[in-house]
Image (cartoon, rainbow, N blue to C red; front, side, top):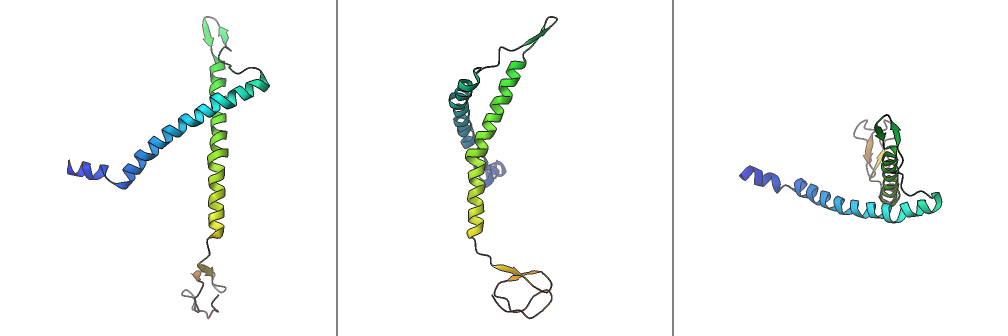
Length: 132
């Protein structure tokens, strides 16, 4: 039991549990946004908000391709919402943070190895350098 308790108290297990709970809550928000706001907006322009009644009958079998179309449209809308409201802004934030981060290293002009900016001699090729 001691090993199991140690496993449960590791930081990554707790972080994963928190991520799952937050992800479930965020999923309900995104699904509500898509079903309550985007789908009615699309149906206002397209005229048909629900494709679930579309089917093809071959013999005695019904192929409900309308439900598949609904699932694909829902997936695409959820993916678009996640991309434009989460992934896009997050990537933009990361790029701005990386641009603001000051470089602490530079390349040696002789051997192109990475050296500290204040170095006066390259550790790889021992060439004499002027500090930046």
